[in-house]
Amino acid sequence: KKQEDQLRKIVESSRNAGITIEWTDHIPLPMPFRKACSFRHQAQFNIVNYLAGLAYAFEQAGGVILQHCLVSLPEMDGIVPTSAGDIRAAHTVFATHIPPGINILHFRCAPYRSYAAAVTLNDRRYPDGLAYDMEDPYHYFRTQYAHGRPYLIAGGFDHKTGHQEVTDTSFRALHAYLSRHYDLESVHYQWSSQYYIPADGLPYIGKLPGHEQVYTGSGFNGNGMIFGTLTGMILSDIILSKENRYAGLFDPSRIKPVAGFTAFVKENADVVGQFIGKRFEYEQLTALAALANGAAILANYEGKKIALYKDEKGKLHALDPVCPHAGCIVAWNSAEKTWDCPCHGGRYAIDGSLLTGPALKGLTKLSVSHL
Image 1 (cartoon, one colour):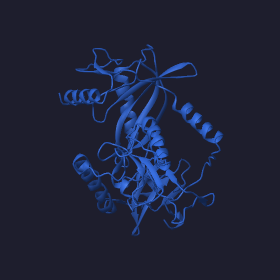
Image 2 (cartoon, rainbow, N blue to C red; image 1 turned 30 degrees about the horizontal axis):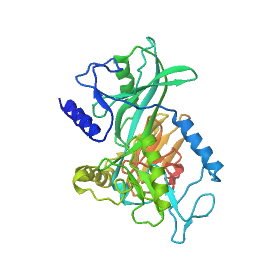
Image 3 (tube, rainbow, N blue to C red; image 1 turned 60 degrees about the vertical axis):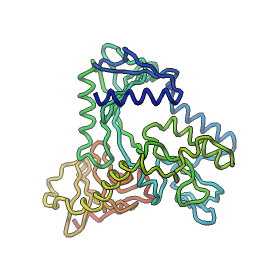
Image 4 (cartoon, rainbow, N blue to C red; image 1 turned 120 degrees about the vertical axis):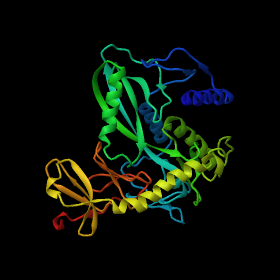
């Protein structure tokens, strides 16, 4: 009943926005349901082809793409420090999920992970549209053709980054859920992805608060194809001093105390809890020899906090678990063998190297010889 009420609100607000939406008795899924709606005039396209086309057009216009290049926040004179050397820029755009450094946006966006799998079906009953349910966290389904072969792509079981002790269970739960509803032939691929949920439900697109001539797009809430494109349109207009009808709506400096206050307090109370609570909850490192290959622990050892991982060959990798971004304590992601920050979503490899910002450097390595 609660989900049904939420769905009615979605239908009503969508119609008010001019979107073609209607109630339907048919869904492309083998699940029971009470109410369903259908969005018309939608399209599905290959995001990789889309991005490749944008990159080609950018380079044809004289743009240069540098890969494996870590970029820091611009300095006062317009110099942008990077790992490949300094770049002078009149305008800088961070199209990076969430901007680097410490910014108010880090306290208005909460990092979440979602889990997905690409499977084949024995009965070939692949859905003829994109569908998702109203559960929390929700499940989503679509069909993707690759090399002439159809795959059911399904996902869900989202959780806040760094907040699930054994992330492998999310994949197992996804497999079990699919097995209950589909005649699975084989699971071909599985992966997880990260996205940021904004406090008031709308992305932050525009000038980065506290900075001049620096811009960003963040808080896409898993809708990157739409909001990434919209970000390009809005930011190019802002930089070229053109009017844009959406610029004010998505302005990162907007104040929405009513709409986003509850979510803002909830997410940032959790961040404070990570600062205070995690520092005193580690098990003592008394069973180092018993640590299984491929396993990791957070522990205290002779007064020092360490993040310890033993690889498949039995080699130990020890790191300082304090995230260099804002000082939170990282958590182990067993599904992907990474150390993830539960506060702002930074992710690190087993050797401490930076995988995902907003930090600008990796975790500090500790000498294993002293352990």
